[in-house]
Length: 175
Image (cartoon, rainbow, N blue to C red):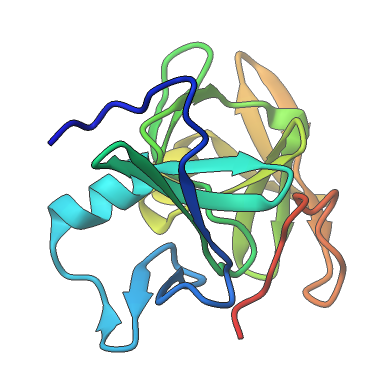
């Protein structure tokens, strides 16, 4: 058994989000009909496997030379900041294990949730990441600001019913 795909082979199995037996809930937990996943190794594997193409977000793996590509349902976004390094500049660790520099201009609040727009993706902050980032936040009469290197960056607020700025292509709310 090999986990490599012949580059000249077009063997790929694609499962639509509607047919997928798992999804990501609004808190970034992988779930199936039995409830949230419990095994941390499987959860980490799924997070690391998240990719995106014109069809939306999917997870994939290669088994027996066949690429399995499963699109999945998710709430606002499947990309989460799970940790924050408060170095200069502050950096985010995403659930995909990718690192991203915090862009204060991209931050916004919707409801009780903090997000960051990065290119055409939306990143949601986990509770843990928000707690760490709160060390750089200041409540002002005009609203929350992020203070980085002595500069106050206002964090814009979007109404709960308001549309997310540039929702990623392929957004599919859970059924």
